[in-house]
Amino acid sequence: MSAVAPTRIDLTPITPASERRLSNGTSLRQTVENTVTMAYRGLVKIRRTPEQLVDVTVQPIIFTLMFAYIFGGAIAGNVESYLPALIPGILVQTVITTSVVTGTQLREDMDKGVFDRFRSLPIARIAPLSGALLADTLRYAIATSITFVVGFLMGYHPAGGFGAVLAAGLLVIACSWAISWIFAFFGVIARTASSVQGISMLILFPLTFLSNAYVPIDSLPAPLAWFASVNPISHLVTAVRDLANAGVIAGDFWASFLGAAVIVLVFAPLTVRAYMRKA
Image 1 (cartoon, helix red, strand yellow):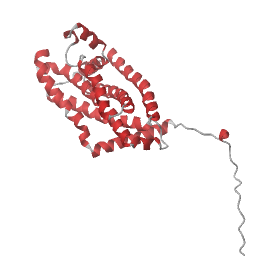
Image 2 (cartoon, helix red, strand yellow; image 1 turned 180 degrees about the vertical axis):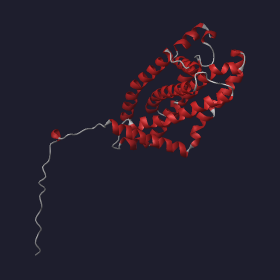
Image 3 (tube, helix red, strand yellow; image 1 turned 30 degrees about the vertical axis):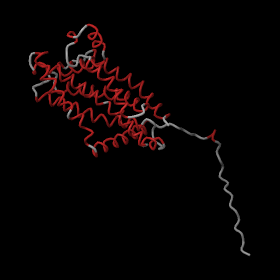
Image 4 (cartoon, one colour; image 1 turned 90 degrees about the horizontal axis):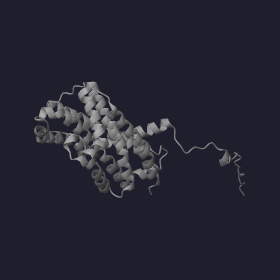
């Protein structure tokens, strides 16, 4: 008969869970790294499907040409005189509207099960969301650049100088990124991507067109003039005009910046919480 090998007993001590140093959170550095990685994923998607950029490349050109030649003579007497008021309005309207794409693409990825996989990875919880929103800033930058280039080709020469124009563009991009958190929240709680787009446009169209983006507020009927005067889009348009046309940072600039910060502080936690609770 063959000898039976003795059984080895593992004497490694087991540390009780109450005495272990466990953490279910992530450091700020890891959160930033994960966000950048997810943003790179978004850029790869854009590179493979460049038609996603149609709205930020074609829309600014069409809107600028259309509004300039339709309303320029009636509002300012000629197109050249209308451009200093029009280009900032077109810029804000185009970039803010583009932020809707964040919510629709987020909903599409969730429907495909992509975010279920992300949720199971040892990464920062906010990274899939913040990374997608960070990647979308490229879209805003493209729309901003094209709007100013088209305006320049049509005869718009900002008196504030290049630095002021750059600051105005960064302000619009920052505010659009903040607003995209609202549409990301809609993308998480909505059932379909089409419903996200429908709800978002229902909100944005009155805000963008019932503002001072295309016409002076004092030319509107009293109720609409009151709404346009308190409309946050009007304050953002005014801030961009002050910067681009005069190089001035006034109260509308700080109001827009503060409003963007408040939106992020409110909707970023709401979006992440809704995302993590989604079945």
